[in-house]
Length: 85
Image 1 (cartoon, rainbow, N blue to C red):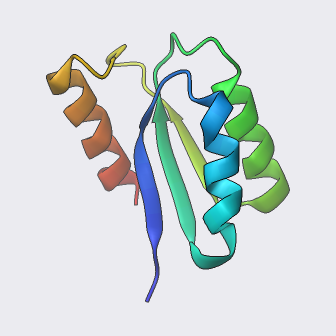
Image 2: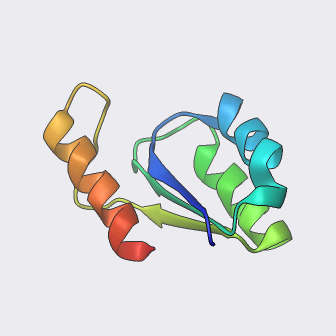
Image 3: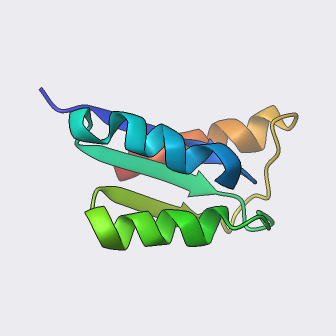
């Protein structure tokens, strides 16, 4: 059985690295859609982890600049993650 972790993220550098490393041995693939306005280093951190471990796909969402309160854009970003898996 293969397990994937996926979801839209924006300004999550404070938490995303820890969460990836906590489950890294048990997960086959990480897929994140990142809002282009994410400005706290989330994109750079995900790209670094992708280079080092090779299990992370980072999709920069150019269609929507979502936030957690914009449910339509958030859901579309999540659907992009599902399509990439």
